Length: 237
Ligand SMILES: *[C@@H]1O[C@H](CO)[C@@H](O)[C@H](O)[C@H]1NC(C)=O
Ligand SMILES: *[C@@H]1O[C@H](CO)[C@@H](O)[C@H](O)[C@H]1NC(C)=O
Image (cartoon, rainbow, N blue to C red):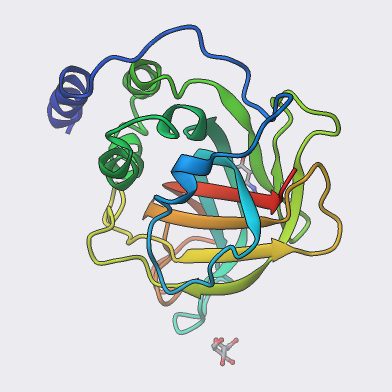
């Protein structure tokens, strides 16, 4: 495993053209018109289109999906208690990258594959200029939250969302470190409390993170590592 991850990493580092340079703090800066070029490359799915909205950020989320089971009921479905992920800025670099389509479809699985090797993962992020953190994804009680507190903006973009629609990840999705399966792609919409110019989040290009169908053989709570891309939209600035 270590060998295959390291050779995958070495391959990634040598194949992907190194693009390291001074990385600006993620926008929106003055005159920001959104990630216009990247918006046209949003991965296709059956989720509703972001009509009339502007693509503001694309974050690579790397973290865990958390699940629970009540002991002693093998037929019960596991509950979802939340998720925690660090969001790395993919959008700034991908917006002008001629290889964007290819990188969009591969980076989630590649990053998840390095989950247990943080130094290797960091090397991948730095080699591509994705090391800048946008902020965090977590749950506020039961509300999925995206707090982009590292973004250069006042107020900081903060999305409190609810699920509008989910569709199964494509068969080609990375199934996760232990083959758990890839979590659904989601269309998440503002629950009325978002601020900072963001109101819609798509969870796309998921890798890993899924829960089993039943609680059979599962502990009371556990975490499943995952990676996903969060495409964050809002009204045009
Ligand atoms: C086990 O879970 C199933 C599905 O949620 C439920 O219908 C059933 O009542 C539960 N059984 C017990 C003993 O709690
Ligand atoms: C989810 O798991 C992570 C990693 O163990 C933990 O830090 C976090 O507090 C958990 N969150 C919830 C809501 O259970």
